Image 1: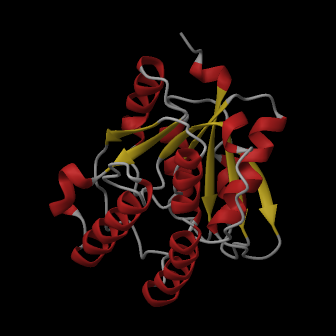
Image 2: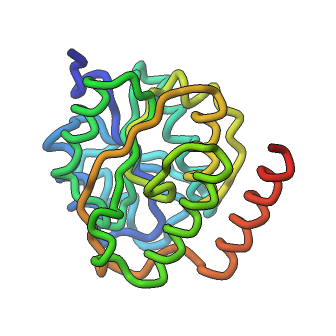
Image 3: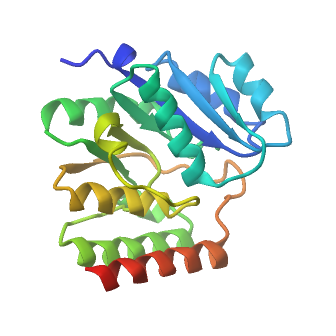
Amino acid sequence: MINWKWQCAAVIPCFNESRRIARVIAGVRRHLPNVIVVDDGSTDGTREKAVQAGAKVIRCPANGGKGTALRLGWREARNAGFAWALSLDGDGQHATEDIPEFFACAERSPARLIIGNRMGRAADMPPVRRWANAWMSRCLSNLTGADLPDSQCGFRLAHLETLLQMPLVSRGFVIESETLVGFLAAGKPVEFVPIKVIYGAGPSKICPVLDTWRWLRWWTAQTAAA
């Protein structure tokens, strides 16, 4: 059995989450004592709140995007000797009480990437987010030949050595899709676990038009290469 408290670190990328980050860290630390916050160029005191809450903070001088922040956090966790990283958002949209479900899945399966699945409670999601996630998940399911119920969820547990072998380059929210497709292309097992849906904690950092365009550009390149 894996000693998760000492073999896994939480990695939380965030941008201007000073009102919520301390609460998120407190919830995570009930399960994992080691929390790495990547402050992606915040201007609202996020770093100070995260330090006060007990997290190790990597401070980015400018906003580089979620993908850039996650890669920094993953490398930091691996360099510190952790074998696994639990990634979640800093805005309170992930229920930290679901964390043990990820650990249980990793222990009963050979999966090296475990992703939260919100679609069992899809009615609780904002309609636009529900539609976009379902559409993107269908596109990626068709591309990979795998059943991917929630390809865009950022609540994930990943084996770091496997993860950091992936040639990931995305700076923004495309990182979720790029990571998932990378694991499947490398023949690495992926599993999904049901999680709660929490919305309303604050405005989304996703820009519907720009981020959808970036995702479509990435997806078009993937389909052309397939």
